[in-house]
Image (cartoon, rainbow, N blue to C red; front, side, top):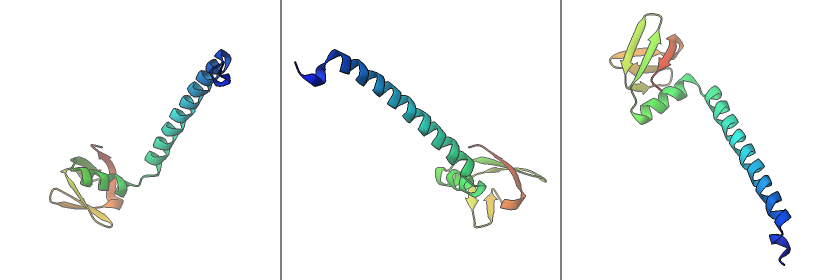
Length: 93
């Protein structure tokens, strides 16, 4: 009999594989959460610009909607140039 095919080792192998898969899934979820929390507002808008996604940019003066064009310290949405420091919220991503 092949010692690696012993029935006891097969069961142990399955339980170790299940534990490994559970840990791997938890680590991937933790990495996704950490990535979302460390992205800056500019990173979020750059991703929307790259994807061609329309966003709604909220400021104290109102809401502008459109595809963003991101500069160093501002974003252009539609015909409005908005300073990144003036943005309160971004929807659409």
